Length: 593
Image (cartoon, rainbow, N blue to C red):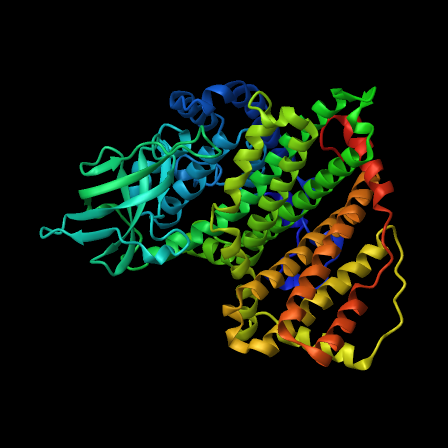
């Protein structure tokens, strides 16, 4: 565990950001990285730029020998062993370090997907649920990159509805094998993997997972899918026909495979958030460097206001995103600090602690994937017509980014998880959401109070944040009052509430990080102010969406008056802020602080 991570992060409860206020020193930020973490970050960057980037053309051409060779080189550097216990050939390091690798290796979407599928959903099920014999047989090979792993859950009829799989497993009469029959779809790494975690229902009922080697009789890998993006990654269907799998290759307990399927996704979601930050930074750098050299009307296009606006919006999004990602993953690390790694239940405790932050993991997945898509869209726009042709990386980045809104549970599913998880915890008494809503209602009934004058460069942003929390709680209370337990069926409202909840966490993360690091220069302040203006527009729109659906007539007018009370503020001069941000980024030729 990183000393930096644990010493500089307060142990907070998952979801509590909506009802509690933290101080800058309570969160982990990139500026808190230890020397060891910075060294691994540099190693990853060097590997990505010197090994992966020169091979992008070969990767995109589906030369899988290149992909496997690069994965093996990553293994040689220890980049695939971060989450693997030391006794099985791993490094067993903290989650922030793992996220740093995910971020900085994302220089090429296809390679990033292959790498992440291997170290995440491919390897973690074995780490967490494998027997000693299974771990001894496979983990060292996976940690070194000698073998590649894949994870097979999705089927043609059960994408987001994972529990509806049809692949069937039957225990043979001799009790020594399970016989599997069925098909899997969209399996990342399928064409290069040696070991698969495959989900099936034993006797059509008990959800279970099995470890299957690629050369197992009856196990067939179908043809490569021709995809919109991440074309250089392997994606194939799997066909299981009378596939005999040794009984000892059952992973975990029969009937409890859903624990494997869903607990793994939390890790996949926060790592996807980190990878999205890396992809956004790479696309941003390419876009800036092109725009600096592109001359129109006798001057570089970076001198034009609307171009500067795109640059500023992208930079502020990246800043807010990395503030969010490392705050959350730092909090996860802090919660894992006191676990006994030698305890028999260590893996179960790790999952339990990570699950505590399930809502934050979903937020990272949704918010960062959508931020990345906005950045690659704007960077393609900077290229003009050149951005639409394959000669420039903007075209590939644009295509590659789209899958992130589908991976690890669609963004729509994750929005329902965000709001549903918060409401469920409130009903269970595990999150003091209902008392917080009541306090907001009491404040409203008491009438307007004088505005508290805060000090500091971000005083206005603190006021926006405080009102954002109140507005989110008010809208959640109004929706709950209208629909009660039926709120879960009102997906549009659940989605709007999720948007509000996300923006609270992102805005607070940016503010706290900036206050923690102000001595490093003014850019963080500028980008926090710039992002806060965008964030509050999202909050206001989502709030109107909710209130318009839960009230009408005089009640709606009353509630809209309350909404305007919480959203009343003096706007920042985002034109001036954007120009300053864009100038700094243009001069640096990349995202910088």
